[in-house]
Amino acid sequence: MPKTKAQKAEIVAKVADRLKRMKAAAFSQVSGYTMADADKLRVKAAEQNVEVFITKRTLLALAAKEAGIEGMDANGMEGSILTAVGYADEVSAAKLLKELATSKKFESKDKSLTMQLVAGILEGRFVNAEEVGRLAALPSRQQLLGQLVGTLNAPVSGFVNVLAGNLRGLVTVLGAIKEKKA
Image (cartoon, rainbow, N blue to C red; front, side):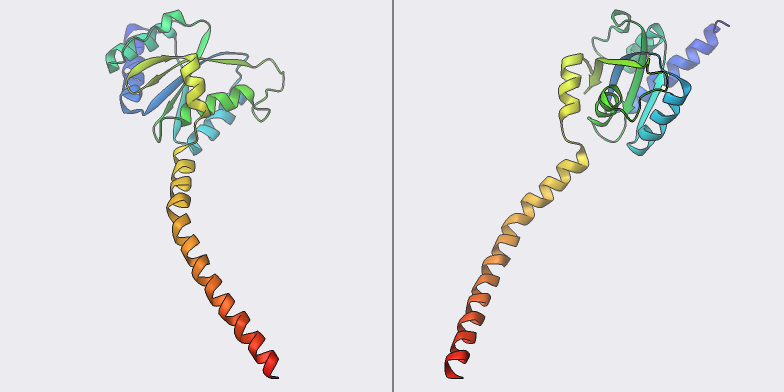
């Protein structure tokens, strides 16, 4: 049954709100996407503070315009568009869709699920599929924070090892002197 103008306006308002609150979004052309696939993806997305949904391209374009996204041409995309909106960091949405496109975990029972990253939104502007792919290759915020902590901790742990080495050397020398006298 076709949607009324009021229903479409409500959808546009919801999507525009999501796009205003997001850090980044990724769009993927999808076919063979079943409800079982959608349920698995929603669970995985919720863990990463990402929201996924499918909206008509025309409504998506209207919502992007209302949200102030520059250069978005949803009508230039083809097929059904799966949208992932990331609220926690800039890479989570792109990573999730790339994982879905390449992973066996999300493989459908009928094996007809096909997916391709087509575009995204980063810092309020529309980006192409190549840029979304590069974004998906970046480490997540948690991984970057872990690397930062490790980098900051390295000089301190190195200093502790140097001091411990001196103490170990002293203990070794004292042990050797004790054995000589015994």
